Image (cartoon, rainbow, N blue to C red; front, side):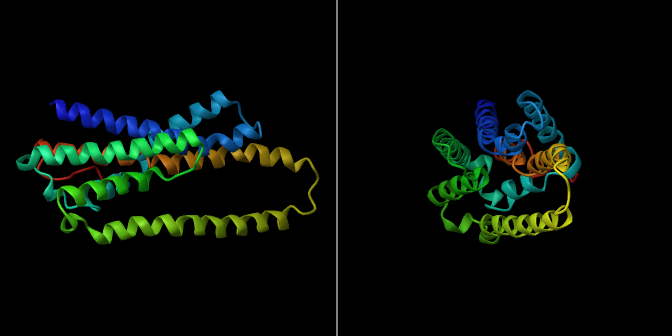
Length: 220
């Protein structure tokens, strides 16, 4: 039972440290432009991040829990090494989150966790226990997602400039208000992605301890 407490506590603290980075991204713009007060912005982000997995499922949790490493390697028969793997992966990601937060350096908590998992598996079990297809998929997203954001952001900005090129300064109020629903959408998308990483590891610990024989999460 102590293993569940330790792993769950570390997973929750990892989720908390994840908020040092990504939750700030959700509310920084609307706070800077004074579209909404900091207190309301943080409350909005917290609510949206929490409810998002209930509406959009747990696909990210499944990816973290069963698509990066062979879950069959982590069994009650190898409890000590399996628990050491989970703790090492979480501590590696947490330390990286704290360092980059302290330095004010934006980083990916998702890929920090995946890196911690892969590094721990390489030491504990060797490369045969890594699902290289799932790992490539996760790493590719690190490169592709900012490029897509750059392209679509540029296209939307050009479109907005063209549509409102003759608008009066009063349109600034409209854009100021529209930041709120866009931030809500960002918080929901973040909640349906990054928040689930900790869920995946917690369920993985249940498999290790034999509380369940397979990695199972609700589909939606």
